[in-house]
Image 1 (tube, rainbow, N blue to C red):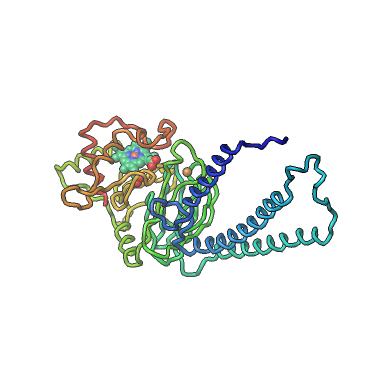
Image 2: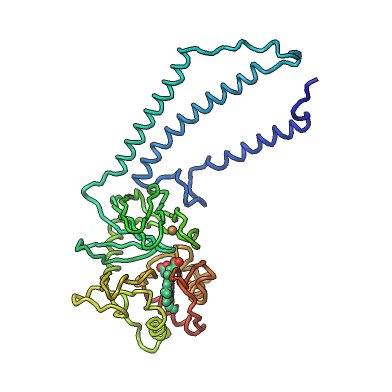
Length: 392
Ligand SMILES: [Cu+2]
C-alpha cells in the first residue's frame, strides 16, 4: 500500500492554512487609496506615474491570464492523469508522446508575439516618459547624506536663487524637468505618486521629470542604500496652484534673514547661530560666510576656492519654517496646540534635534556626515529654537 504524503487530519490543516494565507494576501493590493500607504505605486497622481500605471495594468493582466492558463493546465494535468490507487505497477500510465512540430511551433511563436507586443508597449512608455514639452520649469536635485536638496533658478541666469531641502514645491499641471545629482554617494530619487525611480550619481547628472495633476503632498524616499541613515532619507513634493507657487517663489527669493529685534531670546539665538551653526548652515542674506550681493538679493553663489560648497553638506536654513518637516522630512516642525487647535511651531522636536541629532537620526558626524552633537546647554537650545522659528 502506498502511504499518503500527509495523513488526512494534517492535510485539512495544511489546505485551510494555505487558503487562509491566500485570503490574507488579497488584503495587500486590493485597495487603491493611499491612506497609510504613502509610497504606493498603485495610485498615480501625475502624468508620468499615470503612464507607468497605464503600462503596468495591461502587462499585469496579460501576465495573470498566462499564469492562470499555464498553472491551471499544470494542475489539471496532474489531477487528470494522476496515478490511480489500483495501478500498482504504473501500467495505466497515459500514452507518452513527443515530437509534435505543430504544437512546438505554436508554443514558441505565441509567447514570442506576446513578448514583442509587451516590448513595444514598454518602448512607447519609455519614449513618453522622456518627452519634455517646451513650456516646462527646471529644478536641480542633489542627494546628500541623508537628505535631499532642491535648487531653483527662477530667473534663468544660470545660478540658483532658491535652495531648499526635503520639500520640493511645484505648481500643479506644470512639467518639471529635474537634473538629479549627488554630493557624496549614490542615492535614488523616488516619488511613487509622480514617477518611477532615478539614481543620483556623484560626478554625473541624470534627467528626470514629474508633473503633479492635483494639489497635495506626495511622499518619497531614497531607494539606493547610501549609508547609516538611508532609511531616514525621505522627501516630499508639495504641489500647489500656480498662484500659490508664485507666492512661494516671491517669499523664498526675498531676503529672509532679518536679524531679530534686539534683546529677545531670538537675538541670543542669532548670536549662538553665528558661532555654532553658521560654519555648516547657510542663511541667505547673512554674511556669515559670504558677502551679500549688491542688488540686495541673497547671495547663493556656490563654488569658488573660498567656499567649496555653499552650506557644505548641510541644509540651507533660510526658510526652514516654510517647510513641514526637517532632517530628511522625518520630524515635524509644527504641531497642533491642544487648547486652541491651531497649528503652531513645535519647540520640543527641534529642541531634541539640537540636543542630540544622532539620537534621532544615526550619523557619522566625525566623518562630516550628518549633524554633530554640539553639546549645547538648554539655554542655548531655547535661544536657537526661538531664532530658527524666525526663519520663515
Ligand atoms: Cu540616499
